Length: 81
Image 1 (cartoon, rainbow, N blue to C red):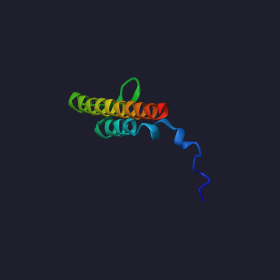
Image 2 (cartoon, helix red, strand yellow):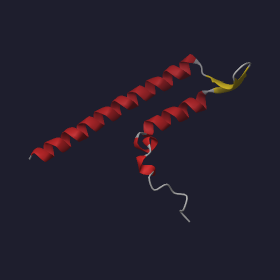
Image 3 (cartoon, one colour):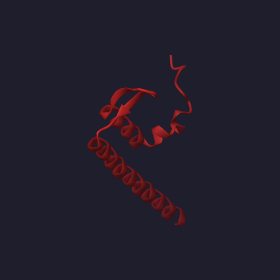
Image 4 (tube, rainbow, N blue to C red):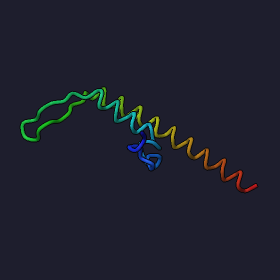
């Protein structure tokens, strides 16, 4: 039944950094697909949508970094005692 389940999926970066997947999904939802003359299929974003997606991503990345640093600091403090 679960033969297709990847036993190493917990190592996948997207599972560790969910905000990266959210960023990519948000970008995908806000883009418009176009056919270019020379390169085939492409995508277009408005600057407003792109800036908003980048802003949210940066806030989530900083939050992740702060939480990760706090956890490591607390773990180090516990190990010292």
